[in-house]
Image 1: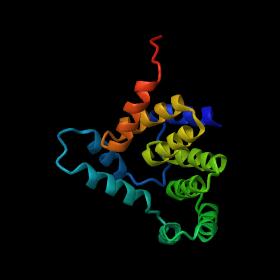
Image 2: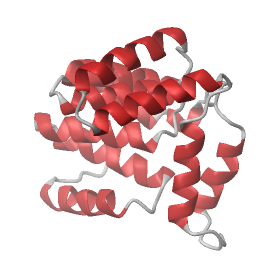
Image 3: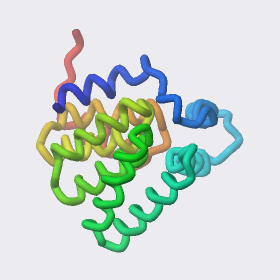
Image 4: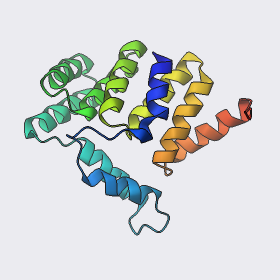
Length: 180
């Protein structure tokens, strides 16, 4: 599954997001890459996350919000039940899949997390949060090359991820690079 998801990540630029994704995301992603952008990158990132948490059906967004609140409160069984229902009812909701992947990651359920990351990225190939989540799983499993590839891709989408940049620098120092 790691290679399958890595291919999805590396080929993400070739795919368009699912129709359910807000068209406003395109401009925000362009702004993240524009060094002359007038908006603060943190504000742009916050807007992206807010749009990812929206859905054409307001009940889907409320369901996701309640599940996220349950996760923060440490009620992981409740959160999982809510997220299961959310992805079942709204299978086009990329952030619901990503949130459940995060929940699985918190529980050391890496295979299930990667499965949901794959679905999130099929719906929203620019989801730098899901890509970083995949990178974290690769790190935990000792696959530093796959982690590096994922983190570098996340930085190409969002160069303002300071912690990810530090991870890339640390990984790049330790791993051999070859030129083909």
